[in-house]
Amino acid sequence: MVKICCIGAGYVGGPTMAVIALKCPSIEVVVVDISVNRINSWNSDQLPIYEPGLDDVVKECRGRNLFFSTDVEKHVYEADIIFVSVNTPTKTRGLGAGKAADLTYWESAAWMIADVSKSDKIVVEKSTVPVKTAEAIEKILNHNSKGIHFSILSNPEFLAEGTAIQDLLKPDRVLIGGRETPEGQKAVQALKEVYAHWVPEDRIIISNLWSAELAKLVANAFLAQRISSVNAVSALCEATGADVTEVAYSVGKDSRIGPKFLNASVGFGGSCFQKDILNLVYICESNGLAEVANYWKQVIKINDYQKNRFVNRVVSSMFNTVSGKKIAVLGFAFKKDTGDTRETPAIDVCKGLLGDNATISIYDPRVTEDQIQRDLAMNKFDWDHPIHLQSLSPTSVKKVRVTWDAYEAANGAHGVCILTEWDEFKQLDYQRIYDNMQKPAFIFDGRNVIDPEKLREIGFIVYSIGRPLNPWLKNLSAAS
Ligand code: UDX
Ligand code: ADP
Image (tube, rainbow, N blue to C red):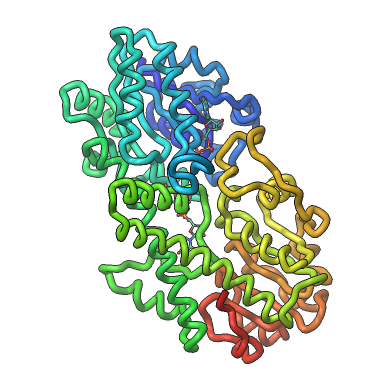
């Protein structure tokens, strides 16, 4: 029986291994992690991450050919194929600070693999890593190999949160990068056989190691670039009276462009986009390609601009100050159908509002108060480190309330900000919300989920990203 071990039971490792176990009953899959809490949750009814469809897959396979364990060394020792899916934070100090990936976790996993292995292994990079990481890992493994052969593969994961199970069951493509040597190609074939259990052969792409590593960064950079492009256009729409949803619809009808990833928003978030672009920028700079680096940097600058612009809209609409005013925030996750808050635009928006001395009341159907308070107190980039290494600065805890009810959050508020596109926000009783708010009642839709005309009829002063402005807002500047 082929044995797979995955180091790192996070958003990538957990769901990916669960689907491999589901589709390959003849393979034993063990997911290991140093975090005892995480492994305990994976072994309980309350999985550590919320992902539609994940519970069913785990229930079907756990105890059959899917296991979660903290005994990292034992399972690495026993495995034929080792996936590595550990954190790769952005460096906050030293060479490349603010851009380069910190490979501490990766490196310590590699040393451990070299230490405990007594048989040949295939080691697969699953978490996104900077280009040429495989080369570094290969050096660590093969210089300490005691005669054992390690083949390194890059097999980047393209799943998106909220649709992870569907993405894994029906991937657009599976990408496997390997060395062009006979051993390298043998390892590629072995991994291909795993995916071939359910992925059609023409969707499995084979490339060299560096192309696979770079393709992952570039795919995320392209996706983020589309969002920054439409968000840049949203500012122009507000200035000129065009409607970004109409512009995006027309543009997306061109089959060369396509309709996806053209929703204007308060900004993109998530664990990948910013981190991967910063990585790309760093790689470009390291190779002396300053113009290319600046080109990609601009995608992040527009994203920061969009979050600032939103805060400025809120503050300038409400008589240039939100000091002492209650602002209800609906949605804190970085997108709908996930409880994940990593790099969510809600953090920057809330910090901006708190900076202007607002009191905020937050409701998200999936995010806990503890998580929100941590996020608002955490330093930039610390989220990708284990909890005990996250430094927290003093917060405005007293200025932030978290509730489990949207109506309670909005009760007595001067303004409402919608920051995540949860479906339930389309169905809320906005008349009831309006009746219980201070007047004039403002609503700022950062995700274009509400119908602005209907809400204006109720009496709200409405701001929707990139859509024609209320007369109230027309002469107020949102530029930072
Ligand atoms: C992304 C990539 O899609 C995935 O392939 C990769 O493996 C990991 O990074 P993820 O971060 O889970 O996945 O979510 P994604 O759906 O890409 O959304 C990222 C952010 O962009 C979210 O904050 C989302 O709200 C925002 N977004 C997305 C927009 O603002 N507008 C859009 O049109 C689409
Ligand atoms: P991703 O979103 O890429 O899956 P996460 O941060 O959710 O990333 O998960 C990474 C996991 O890797 C964490 O649960 C962390 O505890 C685990 N991890 C980091 N280093 C090691 C290691 N050396 N051995 C085992 N697990 C590790």
